[in-house]
Length: 131
Image (cartoon, rainbow, N blue to C red):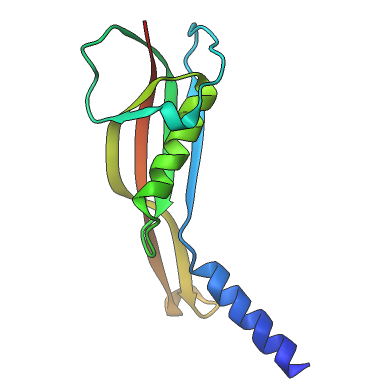
């Protein structure tokens, strides 16, 4: 019985310390619906290309910072969401560290409790389709 409790505690600690990446996408109003593209073919750009294109929607991504996920995991999630929108590329318009939550540590009463800010990486990209 004690062995099972120890194993459950270890599993809970390992799960709590995993790097996380979550993303949502939003198609722009009036944007023509596109058939999905292969995520492997989606480019990740730092600036809008000169090549004619159409904006399809936005991708918002939040990632943990301690521990941080591998950049390849972040890029994979961006490509996946952009591919679902039918994009050829995603242009990063914002990449910053921001407060994404808070947790309390201490007793039941406010006078003996400390609040800690949880910082996360927030990234916003615009999915585009070339003409």
